[in-house]
Image (cartoon, rainbow, N blue to C red; front, side, top):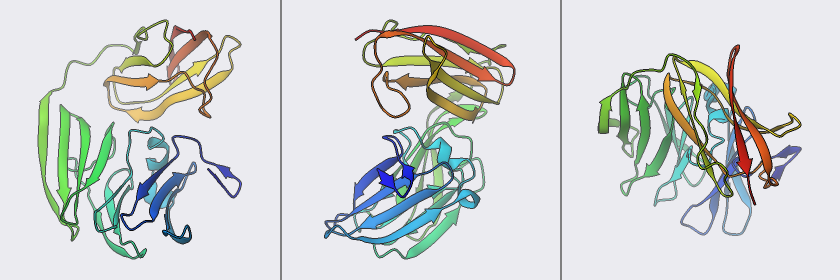
Length: 257
């Protein structure tokens, strides 16, 4: 998608039906999340912008396709998660902001979670689920009703957090060689800002798989063998590099077509 001078790549946008023949589209730049509505006639009826003051590090955290910043209810209203997942905004199909609920405690939608998704329920509210990676590890879910009131959280499969590693570890990717997708697992000893990148044999950066501040413990990403623009790469040897501060660990990866 090209908007003005900005190119939005494959993981930067999504389209959702409004159940009235139109659609909602969310897309992002490096600092702004946009939500726009298009009528059944194909005309843009309104656009909302959530800038840095609303998002914190939210925009760069939603680049993965499995992170959902928006969900649509059966009545056509849309729920948007902003401000590091600590704020839920409900917008009517007309573009009117119906309410905004801020959540500020770790027992609800806390900044620093690793994965999340939002789903509208059948009663005008929504349910948010996320991976808890604090003192305990597990999945939690919380309901927000049609008026913006919070329900309690429900733990799912919660268990004590496993011991932390002593060093930064980048596991051998699996499978390796690969020709479709590959799982890349790594562990960090403490809460750290990390980057996980892929380079070709000429030391040119191919793609940034993850760049974030993460809790200590185990993490994993799936790579489909495409570059930052979604173009499939040719067969060859690639280098995975995990960095945090002055620490750097790497693994070789063989892509076969």
